Image (cartoon, rainbow, N blue to C red; front, side):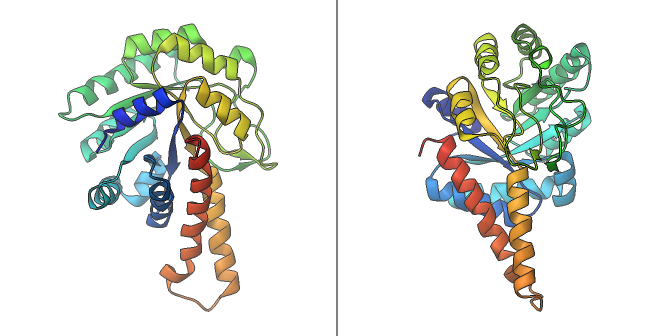
Length: 288
């Protein structure tokens, strides 16, 4: 079975992207896995600090690992948006396949300092753990928004600078980079986010020479995804869209049968809703 690094390299070579989907419960995990399995493509499960605190840091490792081993399937676990070295260390020690140190709100120098520390720890942990760095603030919350998140500036001057990205990668040694290219966390209530800056994606990819990760993919158009992937994006993060699909399906299930008290029955439509959204995204990301 291929490693995560090998899967990313293959995706990069084929000009496709691996889908990264966040979970807060086992229902979403099964929905995501069933979607990936039906298409026979690798997939990454993400858990933010809040999500892994809810599920359990070691418990989510055990869940994903059990599926990987039982089905001999390339399903991987990523510690999404992690804001300190201690929490990066915690995830690595627990058995995560990759970690993101998000120092986007820190100074450039402090971001480099801690990212470098994370890379060093990962390299010395006794197994392969990929480290992703983040450069450029894109917000922090995956939810439905009435406006672009506070603190996020989509103007050209505020997006990730290719020269700075190159310097960051060279000084830290990160395996992947998440830049700000017109993306942001969450999705506008209209359902459609502003266009990505594809030229910026291309410039950053050329400058850094490592896989790029697109965060905040919920709400971006298929055309934007297609162009971003063709120009250097190798992993795409989706969270808000599957949260909404899950919530709406479970809400409908309870409304239709308010007397049902067995969670495995009234939560089942939520699994299917997640599976449907993920299947649609994975088909597009993988040109299927």
